[in-house]
Length: 253
View (spheres, rainbow, N blue to C red):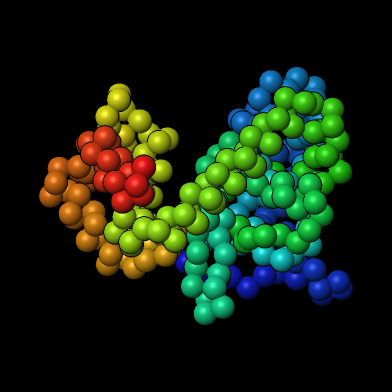
């Protein structure tokens, strides 16, 4: 995916939201958003009315890095990718988010410019909540505030792990570590996991700063060792313990 030029207001020069704006009658529910779980029906309905609802097509830019917008976004349908770009234009994938997730809370909390760009990965339905309404929500609901804090803690932990991996692991080991991270959300029993959809070589390469060829070679090696198996719609990790041991051995854990 190549960088997409931001859309800017001709009057102010600021980056504005793209996507097709939905009418009130088309707006959907926020009931599937994880940080809002447990919110009463009336409070949820008020938030839904306060949101700006937009649909985005495959690979359309949602927000641009360094833009001054401060809304918080809820992924109601589809998937989005959080990315940055090097000076040469190389894409660096930070995280992929699925329906039920949220993003944009950093700028809402500190008022600073966006730290990354966000693109749709398929057809998406996104609800944007203003900074004021988001902060009011946190001030009036401690459980939601704690969920946001836990999400931020997760971002810090994940970033720390990736920095350590980039600093200490060879490229093939970084690919193995990335597979191990992805496997955590698709556990099957104690020693197997499924990664859905099947990881794209270029996406893994972007996350761990290597080449598609290296990713392909590592996956082939793991398949020959009977640690992974490519299925129709998923990559099956057949021996999670062995994959974990391979990563921990080079990490020195």
